[in-house]
Image (cartoon, rainbow, N blue to C red; front, side, top):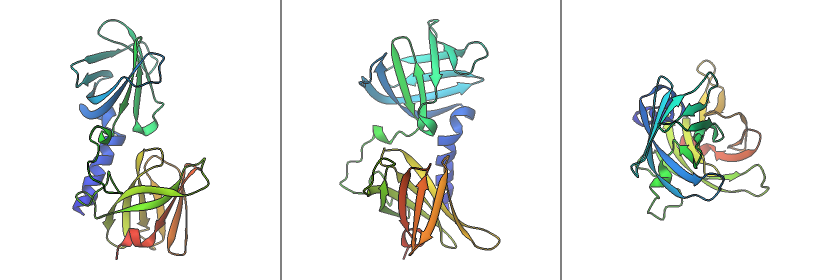
Length: 223
């Protein structure tokens, strides 16, 4: 149960904290304006208070953004320049367009600390999860299955939360739960639409109508 609470805290930070909390750690990718070639990736912090945003980069640069007008996402920085906030990263982060650069700000900071082990299930390890595994997975555009690393947090009554790294490198959590009234099993996922079917001791989970994951019952229940 200690692990389940830890996961809940992490998910709360990823989904909601940037809108409500004072600050959160993040990873900032810096691109020259109009370019798709990354100039730098570095640690940063994201702070928000009453609509005002501060992005503090590890290289000593700070961006103080003040809301402008009534249109959400329009800002002015400390130099009086126009800055636009965009949501093109979904629940993974935010994009800020400055006149000279773009900042892709990600809530997940694991890319800043590459795993130095040879574990095939990295970035997941049993230091943080009850178990790790490789799930059969494929992206929406693929026909053949590959493997996606996952970390498993098991709960009582054969339930579990499984955090997985998708074929595109995004991390999210699938929850394999049972109805408290009649024990009927069901599956949901963080900020994603789920279609799940169970057959031959395996859940086949389709995410947002595209990505497909195969999750054996043994991964959920252990043993």
